[in-house]
Length: 140
Image 1 (tube, rainbow, N blue to C red):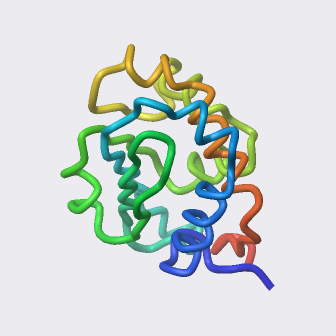
Image 2 (image 1 turned 120 degrees about the vertical axis):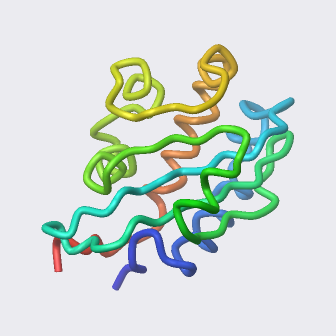
C-alpha cells in the first residue's frame, strides 16, 4: 500500500528520498531558496481542497518538506501552481516540470532563469517522488 498523495507521510518519505540522492546533492549545489508547490483542488478527481507543499531546500539538501495550505506555499521564494492532475503528470514523469513551466502548464512565481539553471535538480526531485509509493485519490 502506498501513502496518500500530498499527505504528511508522503512529504516525509519524499524528503528522505531527496536527502538520499547523491545526484540531487550535486545538481542542487548553490540552491538556497524555498519552493512552494500549490496543488489546486479538483473535486471531480477526489481532490476536494487545494494543498501547498513547502520545500525548504538548501545547497543540495531538503531541510524540510511539509504539506499545508495553498497560502503556506505562496509565501515561498518560488511558487509553482498547477491543478492536481497536472502535478500527478509531473510526479509520474509524464510531464517534465521545467518544460511544463516553459509551456505554461505550470504557473511560476519567481525567477525563471534560476529555475532553468537547476533543471537537473528539478528532474532528480521528480525521480525521488517516483520512489515514494503513492495512492492517488482519483484512482481509489
